[in-house]
Length: 425
Image (cartoon, rainbow, N blue to C red; front, top):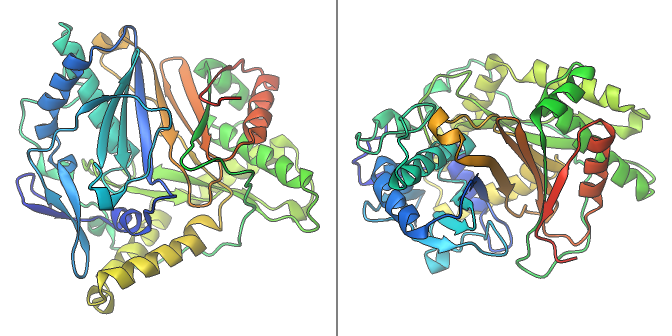
């Protein structure tokens, strides 16, 4: 188990992949933001960052490239500078320039953090964001308790928070690996590098829950089905002679199934899909198929088999002695084949952002944005707080047809949407 005072950290299973596939035209960076009820004071925010960083030693690191493996080198002095926000979020990590793996921005009422995915998954990042926002409010004179996932910056780090949890649960007798056909990939006209177009819809959780309930599915399943339907319509409009499956990659937080306090990566993904070659589908049929697929495959037993398979590759005696550049080349090639081709888009929904009551009156909503994908396609993420959900599309293509189709469908389902965008047109 990792100790918070150690000099270096091994990369977890997911971090190995993200560090190997990162390149200048792909961004394994994601963003979370909180929108406050006032204009952010950067001096107070910088003080808050200074206070909370020692509580997160796993984020005070630099990525180093060894002979056989990459690793995180501890840097206890690292405190990210608070910066004015930028026009294009989620910029790729450029290792040649010693780019930071954690960034903090402000703009108007918005506080944003960006993390390189090798550091942590969304669950770990949200703990950091809650703790940072709580400390910022304390700097403004608000009394905030350390509850609902807010960590106490005066307490020493818990070693369990920096555990690589994957090996602990790699004990299944069975192993499972992904075997899937290539999926439809919707790609339009690329923007100049690096332009990340973001279109965000803000709507009521109560309204979208009522719409999902009509089909007997969860909010995540409802929104995922709507995205699949929009992608199917895009493919149909292209007039292909043979249509490919339309599939999503949806990250699954493993902590509810395998107890762990880790703030590092501890996720797997699932792949609900529709094959248009089988015939036409109503939305109710798409929603039902997504619902049953996720209920069938998101099980403790099946996920443990995937964990065992992934960790088994990492433990291979042969792989240990292959030089790191060759390992990275192999993982990047494998990601192009298995990490991108079987999916049409990513849909991430970390769930409900829960806060202490003292914070709720000062935060209007929370937002999430995914960085540029390997292929430049548009990806989707959603997160909610109270009765407000923010769902964003982000990608590097000029066209906004997918976003337009999706939000029009949502309105037809009885969910009014307020649209925000950084697009120039």
